[in-house]
Length: 444
Ligand code: AMP
Ligand code: MG
Image 1 (cartoon, protein in one colour):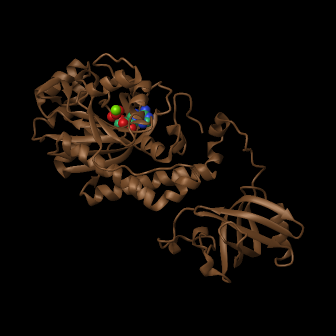
Image 2 (cartoon, helix red, strand yellow):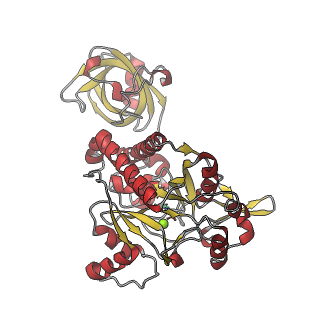
Image 3 (cartoon, helix red, strand yellow):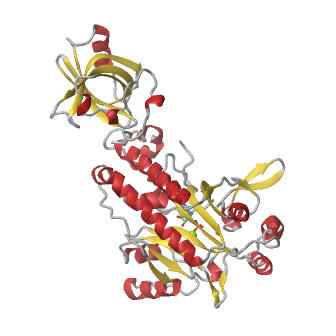
């Protein structure tokens, strides 16, 4: 059941609706209400039609008795098919047998939009469900995930605004790669070359010299062929960037942000997590453990028998195994400079590694975020761009920031699909999206 009771939704009620289903409680016993929604279940029993009505907030049982409605209403009730849109008026009745303890005894019933026979059956396979995503999103499980994703974003915004962050919107059409050229999606731009953004970070770095603490919740696009359970070609991130911040500052901020979101989810939605998604979830406690990249390699060798040469990124398996060794989120810090993007600040005490970290989820979920200190020195940044064979001319505005008073700064990006998948206990990140985009899927 989606919670709307605390909000005043009355100005949004349309089509003659008097209540949302979530608002119908025993307190309304005996009152006449008008509801709109979709037929979720239906069963007939002589002079009675039972319908489970669904709206954006929940479900409720409705009984339509031949002797209590006019002829047209009863005809409509008998004719109505699953997932048809309907409107009905009725009296709220307490009924311990009804799911939810109350039901509606209809006084009138009307089909608003009749549905064809519903194509999704209980035994539908994964591929078919993805092809039918435009219809499947009505299922209880998908609705709950999409709703919790929305709540996760709401809590993130709530937290960041309390901390004085300003929300910005960076361009989606860009010319300079943030995460290397290989995964850029090119597009035609009036005779020029442009790309879809991989991350808002570079623009946020400009924004902090104006607004100091900024964040955005925005999509990133990566033309990655990796068919893992954790990769999409279009995904969303919350990205934060802070002027005058250190590596420690952004790790602390992520700890607080993730813990806040998890606590709010459990406080307000534990029931949905448990009952609909079958997920036992405990919010983490601060501080999160921190291990260096080098220590992570040792752990992998000792505990999982995985031998990785120093300077190689974790593959999917190593990341999963490492993540399984922890029961709450943890940071892996000081990644080698050779495997980090050009903007990462090398550690002045050991330039082989960067002042960067990935926040990892436990239980095999792996990376939730990447972050770190950005290079603020002009010459070092030029050197790193050249070393990574990136076109220097595309970065001239970004380099300019280094000539005009950019202070030391740091930031991070948390993947929203990854965070939602972990909180909801899902196997694949695509299940957290309305319409997933993968190398093999751009439809529906
Ligand atoms: P990055 O800067 O590449 O580490 O991206 C920041 C965060 O975005 C990662 O930690 C992931 O949570 C998320 N992310 C990155 N790439 C993808 C992808 N292809 N699909 C889903 N999430 C992603
Ligand atoms: Mg990363």
